[in-house]
Length: 517
Ligand SMILES: Cc1cc2nc3c(=O)[nH]c(=O)nc-3n(C[C@H](O)[C@H](O)[C@H](O)COP(=O)(O)OP(=O)(O)OC[C@H]3O[C@@H](n4cnc5c(N)ncnc54)[C@H](O)[C@@H]3O)c2cc1C
Image (cartoon, rainbow, N blue to C red; front, top):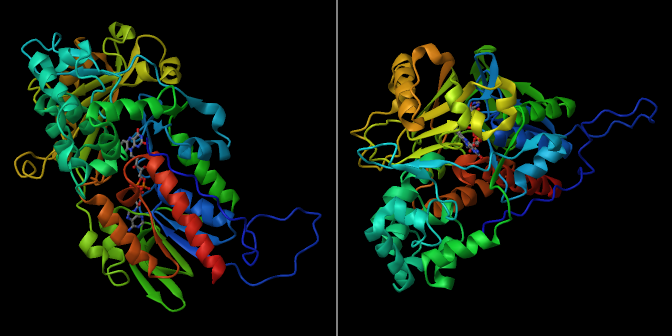
């Protein structure tokens, strides 16, 4: 069964928390009650914005502190050639209701759009790059085929690879389904062999998680897959059953105008709920005493250290920052402290090139690691993927986004430099050359009407083997401290669906806990 997070039911505003909303002008003035409980949320990415909103809706008086100049974290926007484009996340998974429900609540339901159904292509290694590209098989899960004998799978992994993959049907399940933790790479390699792993699964996983299948925890990135393997006796059977159980239609959706609209809608809602929002406010220390929390801020708006006090603290940062800031209060976090995650550089090109109107590679290309002719790990043809964007550029003008930050196994990290260190001009030239090869349309500097480089460091935490156990240990440690919650992708898993569902569940639990005090 696919993982289907249950949406939390937020308790109605707790009676002893005076509501933060305005009273109607003709309402009988309320007798002033006790001061509302206060909360401080550290981090203004998606998890922090959602946490602040759900706390404020429950009647708490909330302050949100974000280190950067803008809210949204990975859900940001930038302007390239006069277009407002997503600088990070550009879509959300629709297999759970988490994000669609939030979008409806914010009144943005009308703006939800489906991507072009053409799908992406796969670039494999080969002398002739054009001949080594094919449509990405659409019947798999994270690139794992439901039918290893299907023609498009044979095309991708060859007859020998397909024959090895088909052994999955007859191999005993063995300990793979029973072991406490196992990497996705090991599951795929053991069942279907190396060709499926390298040529199908690694390009997909690299594109989505910027990570290597041998690093990733199978249960975290493909919840339910091992249970389905045990039930059906083969990995192909497990994938087929999980796909059959998924809702029909596209697995992702976006917002007309870009995902940055979600950040803006959340910000507007927070302001309407009376949340105090501070950007440029990096939290440098957190103290805890019997009476609550003291948070120290330094930043553009507060060059001198300044403090904010609150009854409740929600830490909604990346994992390493949370572990450092809570080192004194929750020392157990140090042991579960995640690595910083891979660095990713995204190069956006806006080009005038009518040959791209034909969408030569559908919505984009995922690139296998052994393709020497190209450095990028993925290319999104944004104007082919999103009609709203094509409508805003008009024919002939195209938006391409290339991502750099090849999935690294732990052993490779030392030898492969992060793309984040490459300078902008170098990445721009590389992106132009890579796009020409991947799209089979020559692109020159004169075709470019605008470009930008955005770097993300540590924004895609790896759910490494043993991730679920580490998350359980973190949560057990955090739960021992009253008035504290820790949320964010490093615990929930990468992706807006995971972050939204998990944050809402955790904040609902926190509000319930506060109501009992
Ligand atoms: C390039 C890219 C593309 C992606 N594409 C997609 C996609 O298409 N679909 C999808 O579902 N997901 C996508 N994701 C993943 C998704 O965007 C993230 O999983 C999610 O947004 C993470 O939210 P978060 O709030 O946990 O973390 P973040 O967005 O990282 O927010 C954490 C915030 O905490 C702040 N902070 C850190 N330390 C401090 C401090 N000391 N004081 C104050 N503030 C602090 C940071 O500045 C940041 O704003 C993408 C991610 C990236 C990087």
